[in-house]
Length: 312
Image (cartoon, rainbow, N blue to C red; front, side, top):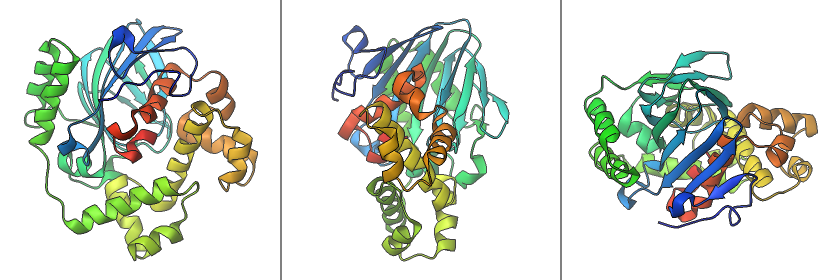
């Protein structure tokens, strides 16, 4: 596992890196109090299925923040409870064991007391392993996993664990038991889509069609199933994610990115970033929220996580 500090990852404001000298552990001073996030890189056997494992904590009586559009997340609420507020206006309480589907816009969350959360981000193969259904059916929604075999027992063991390393080990065993073999054709498709999303500043559908030799209708069906939305919307999402990281971490001019990213104009650029990230480009540069900072730092994990998961 690698260690990274705030300066190495772009010097984002307010970040205190290596909290208590722990690797991949970050603290951000928010208005409501310190917010902490520690990342763990997964064992090699899980890397193709899951992006990262993390432990999030905050100590405020009430905490609210916004998370950007993201891949699905499996979250265990060790302490605290709250609500998700999705970009379409839907509000949902957070189950103790929560499977959050792919999100296609910034999502606000609230915690009603000091909170501690163990989370795992799911790549498409991990979604298949833990859910198995069409990802678009749970887009911007949550599912209570408390009645699924083994999940409640894992929650109780996580609550009793002595430290984050013990929590991680429990989750490695739990996830490894649920891996499913995928056909080679599925792996090739997922690799092609991931490469397409990461390989172009503004991914074009024609490029993906050429890579996969699939029709637009076939591509829409498959990306809905594995990523939660059709290719055009998926491309918009990852274009915004990439741009946000370059603005906040690399300190690139958002005006220059606007011209390079095939946006219509600056107003279009601002709307896209605001929709998918929850902040304007100016806010990303000057006053990113605590969770925005911590989530962006996922990119600093480098080779410790799958390439696509560094941006989502």
